Image (cartoon, rainbow, N blue to C red; front, side, top):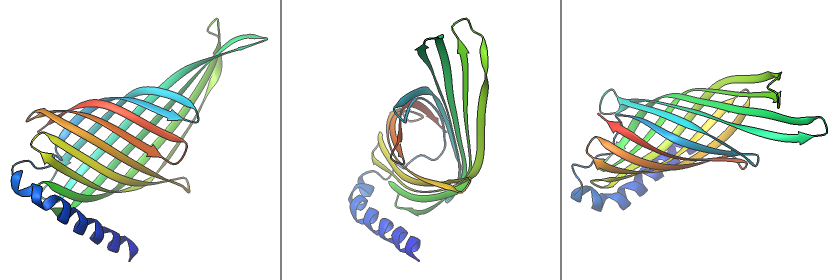
Length: 213
């Protein structure tokens, strides 16, 4: 199968590139046990929404882990017409809950895959300058997602995660490519910055902190 072949190629490449670093960083394994929070800026259709993100990961054994990610962003916009000033608030929620498997691990690099549930909700409300509401419209859909990624600890305090996620909601599909860089200020505390690109019209940037257990 094409997917199996791609996975085998990714494992082989990561082995050749990372193996010299594995000897020097035997005690620096990528973390899959953490809770984190972040500031999120989401750009979609020339609009910018801001909010927060939450992320939890928990390993059950050497190979199996659970991952959950929630993003909540919103923004208010004002428009002036002949009838006055109107305010619109737009909000978006995106949640992933996945069960993952680490199918390659050389000590400093892990190649993993996961599948799970996805929930998306978009809401919009409008009001005039005096606060009179014109109502709210919201739409929520559920679906599935599958992710393939590689997480590497290049030094005792630096970690990178590169992942591709396929999302299928209401018979519509999208692909998300994400890159996250993490710096460990302490053994159990890290700071991270990440960038994600979802299709050709939306992207997000986040800054946050995680506690590792």
